[in-house]
Image (cartoon, rainbow over all chains, first blue to last red; front, top):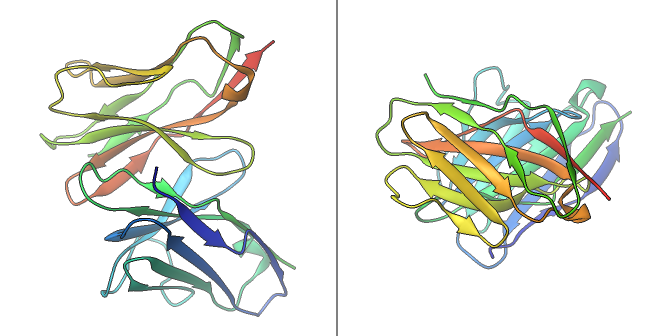
Length: 115
Length: 113
């Protein structure tokens, strides 16, 4: 099956700093990548959808200036949490999809802790 | 409106028994896809099975089968011969026009030895 990697798997940062999370599709070209946020024992909350070479589409309520998404190539998307605050602490998961039926293949997730 | 509902927050099943996880959906799109994902405690989301809205037969993948009842708008996941490693969160998801995905709230499955 398709493999998606995510780096780092865990990160602890201080309040006010920025953190970059990378998402890579290792063995296929992802036309679309998605970024989700998941709170403990909750479902995934879609943050944004990004297509290679174009601006990300953010879901309502997600601050685009705070969560910067770049989809530079068909195999790489990055999420940068700028000026992180403790309330940004969460589990962030990326996914990638390609052709029909467009199933999403997920990365292993990144646990962000802001102190 | 697009909506996907999982009404079972938690389920228990005896090892080697079969279990059904419920999922209902609502969409006005004529073409859609239904997916099930497994999320073990490690956090990774694992794709299990897919059913297209025009597929005539129910999807099967090993011990997983999807009981697709289009008129009832349900897409229940059936896991046969449960194993201890099946203990995890299970999410039902729907893809509609524009490649938009909607996830259910999940069902926590515990397999009892």
